[in-house]
Image (cartoon, rainbow, N blue to C red; front, side, top):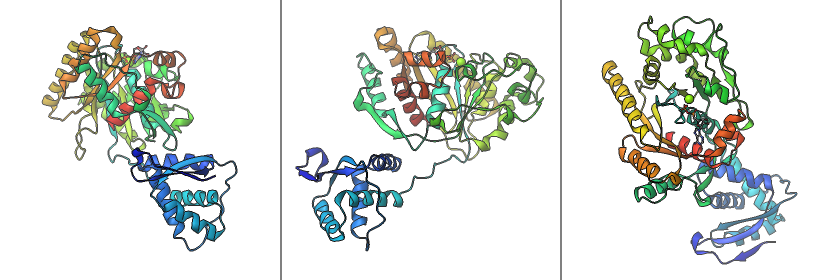
Length: 424
Ligand SMILES: Nc1ncnc2c1ncn2[C@@H]1O[C@H](COP(=O)(O)OP(=O)(O)O)[C@@H](O)[C@H]1O
Ligand SMILES: [Mg+2]
């Protein structure tokens, strides 16, 4: 039954309308409106306007099982819609369903915006255990998530709020309150995760197997001694939400010998780029999970993230993962010095994509909050992600599942999606 209620102040001059809509149609409407970044009420308004101006009634829609749906329309619109529906001898529920379908047909899912140059994100810090691998995986998963489904994302203002609270020396809360969560379609990008650490953590965490020592590997390709096509080593991280878009290039223990093998190679710093370039056409984003070292492999990774001709600043570069504790600061200094040296020596631009403060726990008190503040104060690069110390991460590693499919609604997942949207 349709009823009218007075409009609440929040929806300005619109009036509330309560009707019915089948669940599948409501879901499509929700997702499509989010994909276009417009409000549901605006989509319904447009659909009804179009429906009213049609010369004839469109095809009948199956409205079986329709249940309560309410929205806000400009005053008078529903009244007119009612009149026209009566003239056409169409029930209000059928008319509304047709209006919504009309809007969906007129507003197909927008095409994914693919970067013309594959974006390269180098996740680094020579300090072990800060969360490089966790961030590589979470970020890649978040970027590959299905765009025809809505996923909970911590909105940007929640990060700002937490950082401000830390500035004010409050206990910065990383745990988002429900109001700071927004349901958004996934970016749906094609993502390659490169396990560039001889310890094979990323490979193991995602349930993959490290490549055997006597076969082909990224190391062989970098050393100019390939045994086949690098593509043949890639595996898909399968879960419905990634729809075959999330891939992994597993590591091999032979990467422990990379620095030695590279010592005989000309233009060593370009070795990773030479190896991965043939794969780039297949991916929108390539994320490199760096080893905890500052050796040649780090140089090769940083070089791979350099800004290319025709590439806008901030599209590719280094994403630095740190922990909110004092010992992280020295590691950061060393790393940025090395990247800055590389920039100077090779005359290349290597952009910083930001700092991710991981494993943050405000209950650890002053040490945590004051060092978070230290990271925030750097300002350039700025803090683009703040991720709490949460159990789901460790659990996902234990069961060797991607975090975003193991615990898609966890604070951890919600924060990874926020990070993905900051980096995009
Ligand atoms: N935000 C987090 N909350 C809880 N545990 C985490 C978090 N980030 C990482 N970890 C855990 O800490 C350990 C080290 O993280 P990892 O990503 O392997 O660090 P790195 O790659 O820098 O060495 C792993 O066991 C990982 O599961
Ligand atoms: Mg690691």
